[in-house]
Amino acid sequence: MSLLRHGSGRLSVTEAHSMLQEHAVVLLDVREADEWQAGHVPGARHLPMSRLTAGVDVPGAGGGPRLVLICRSGNRSRHAARLLAERGLDVIDVTGGMAAWARQGLPVHDARGAAGTVV
Image 1: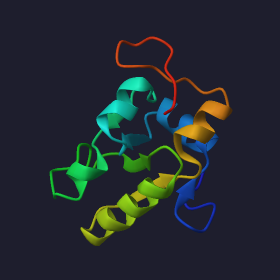
Image 2 (image 1 turned 90 degrees about the vertical axis):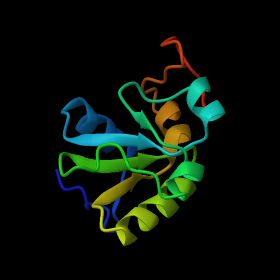
Image 3 (image 1 turned 30 degrees about the horizontal axis):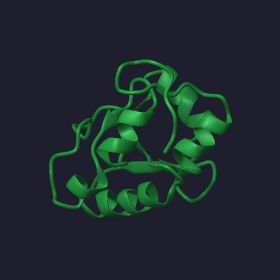
Image 4 (image 1 turned 180 degrees about the vertical axis):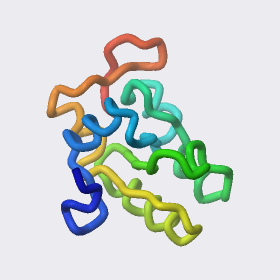
C-alpha cells in the first residue's frame, strides 16, 4: 500500500489503522493533553502541537517506521506535517483526524484505557 496514494501526502483513517496494526508506522497525536486524555488511538504516541512548535524532539523520528500525524479534524496534523517536513522528517497526516477515526468505528481509548471520546 502506498503511503502517498492520495497524492497529497495524506492517509485515510482506514489506511492509517491498517498500517498501525502492521507496525508499519508510528502514529503521533498532535492534539492537546485534554483532547488526548478524553480519547486517543490505542498505540499512538502523544506530542501536542504546542510542544512541537517549540522544537522538542519528536518520538519515533529515529529512522524507523514512518511518522503519521493525527489531530481532531486533520488541520493541525497537516500543519504539523509541513513543519516536520521542513525539519527534514518524512511524515504524513491522516485525513479527517480523530473525528473521522471515531466515525469509522475504529478504537478510541481514554487515559485509563476505557472507551474514549473525541473532543
